[in-house]
Length: 293
Image (tube, rainbow, N blue to C red):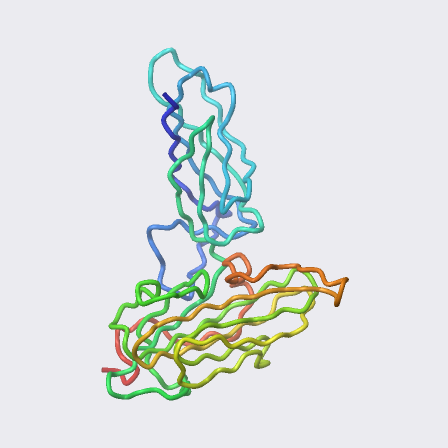
């Protein structure tokens, strides 16, 4: 029989003496401990043995990225029972979703999810009263925001993916954050949506499909150099066929020298920074429609 899988627990960010956790601009998911890329954190791994495999430590990864850690070693007892490793590590670059897994021998733990605090996007959700109708994006400034949450990517294939706190009829979502570009190249952005959307990088319009449409792809290309660009995207749905998926592809060179840097894929959470972003609106979750009702 294979050994019982290990269990990850008690994940906690390490704060300096007197330091207080930074309040995020979105509603906190209390089920996910919050840790920033580059921040130290602690966690426990319960290892059920058998003792004959305890001459090695488990390996730990987050989103497939190995996480080196130090652990307090405890003497192995002759009595049956698990050992608990108290571990300390630094959250590495290249993570975004926060899926943490420990592996020992041939078995892996169930995923333990953390909130990678400085990755992802702040999402502002607006519930437009039924019957109002939308033909294009309105000015969001005066509108009441129903909910402020964190989205790790713009990858919504259907109503269930949107996980809306109100009926999926007529609504608007605005996403704000930063887009991390690691290599210079020609970046093609493709958004499949129903209905309209608009995308800005550093206040420059990159993709504009601000119109009523059945599910359709709109794309645009722009040359980008390494850095973090202020990212803003708005999307509206005017009943039926809720979908909004943002993908990218990056290449460098031309003709026979063309090199693919990033194959076409949904932009992952690790590419969205919350350390850089456009000005965030002074809005919080109200549970009310855009007209305040």
